[in-house]
Amino acid sequence: MMINNSHSSPNLRSVAIIGSGLAGLTAALLLQKTGRRVTVFEKSRGPGGRLAAKRVEGGSADIGAQYFTIRNPGFQQFLDENAGTDSYASWNGHFGYQVAPEQWEPFPDEARYVGVPRMTAITRALSEKATVIAQTRIARLETANHGAWTLVSTDDERFGPFDAVVITAPPAQAQDLLTDSQLVTLAAELDEPVRHVQPCWAVAAHFSHPPFDQYDGMRVQSDILSWAGNNSSKPGRDDAGQWWVLHATSAWSRANVDTPAEQVASDMIREFQDATGSRQQPDKLLTHRWLYAKSSDSDTPGHRWFPDQRIGLAGDWLSGGRVEGAFNSASGLVDEMGILSD
Image (cartoon, rainbow, N blue to C red; front, side):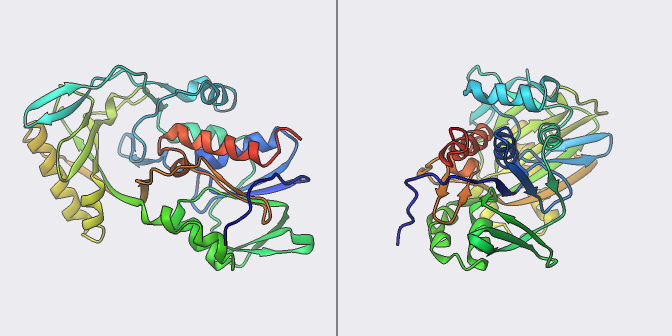
């Protein structure tokens, strides 16, 4: 049975948002500006989502999205007004892609931006304007009086009631939450998106001396590596030596999803050395496995709103996969909910 999502729902005075990445915080701030009461629930200690960074000796390394572009003027206006112009800056590095062994071509000219001094600076600045309950994993949704929603955490804490719920988790996690909430019809809507979810292994490697100076960011022609970037070349970083961030290809990550992290790092470093011709060995390593890194689905409706249940879905996976897609998805959802125009 298909879900009816052809009309808007009025009288949404209170909204719960699950996830404090860019999509969740965008939805929260847009809803707040219309006078709605909004609470954001985050399973981790702080916000971030794909705009993730890990603390490393002397600073931090961006292990999620490496940069973002701005094609929607509304996205830049939103960042400037809510995160502040000092929370991000242009990454004026040299970028190339590998077309053959030892043969590189420059990236097309385009402005690329990063959070300063780390990617999470953006979501942390946004979260300061929202009500965020951190370190709280929502296990299920329950209907309360008059059809409102109560959120139940894994620690059996109860929150609500809320008139609507916006879920910004990756599709596999969103589907699990809907299934555990007995919303099997809505959960079935995510069967296809879940099949397209791709994992990604990330490695941050520190080198005492620059291992490669031709480019600061590279698309690598490799069965193992898809990206290598000099994190220390980004604005606001003040590292001794250089931190490089490597991302594995989706296919290799899927085939090695359960491989020990030490072996993953070794294989990815070796591939980096082969691609760059460097024989330097890193003196520090950090690995991170993204189980839900991106989606290969070309059917991206932008967002989903189920007015009969008053449940919405937003995230970059619904809007092309780019960082800016998270903003486009959330703002489109809020608009369809009828909040901005009522």
